Image (cartoon, rainbow, N blue to C red):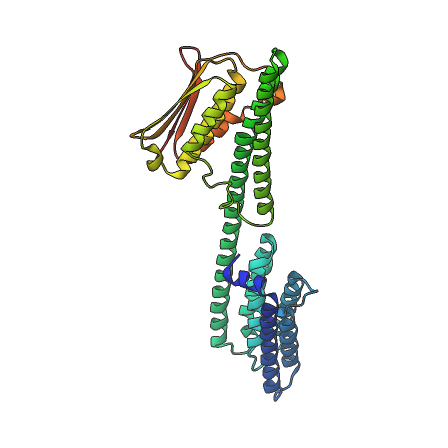
Length: 387
């Protein structure tokens, strides 16, 4: 939307008053031309006067009459009168200033607001009609050149504004698509992680004999994971509601860094309580040197990697996580010593979006991610995040 169109949308009554005032000025100009030219009354002069009044009325902002209806009517009127005068009797003196300006107003609105195919047909009709208004006179003179230049300028400027508006719409759609993908990653990384932990804990309690104390501990972890999952879902739903109301999700937590290296420590401690022991290494002083968005991406990669370990290597005995700086950027390594997958249903096992999400996060920063089995029998995820 152009700045002028944005202002008109914010102040509709003022914009309508300005359009109505312009239409009245054009009508006054046409009336003045008719009164002056009435000194030499003739049928051609009457036709020109009637054409000017009808076209100016068409340019007025009538709420109940669509723009295209008014524009088609104005084009039909002006071309009917123009062709009848060109191939009939030329009037001696015809100014046509009010009618030509009204056609320019309609031309600008059509090029800005009409569908592309309609604008491609109706726009030239209005533009050429404006240029042809002075040709009705027996001696057009400089008026033909003046209105030709005005038509080119108004048409070019209107097309430029239309192209800018189309580009803004494309950019907005691209931003919304990126936000939806980010929210999908958030949903998978946060909610799926907690829900997977709940399922794993419930399966373990179901197929193994546990004491009352052990069962209370397991139920406590399930309760904590459920609360965290619900909190994450509420936050994402809030962001989606704000986005539906026309606000961007930037600044509301969807695309801004929401976690860092401190959260990685908390994450690994929580994972060790219900799964294999995690050995975490973070290079000294890295927290103060690491940008927030890189730290958030590293946290999401570690979160997803631990979720995959809980699913696909439930019997692993150790997990090693390391974060260090290299000449090419931050290296994030997550490795386990292998194991058998957890007994999960197909729905709980997931659809393979976790690894793709990790790769997308790394590539979004210009980095890369590799994942695969190790010669020792475990699994290794390595991400390089440029700084």
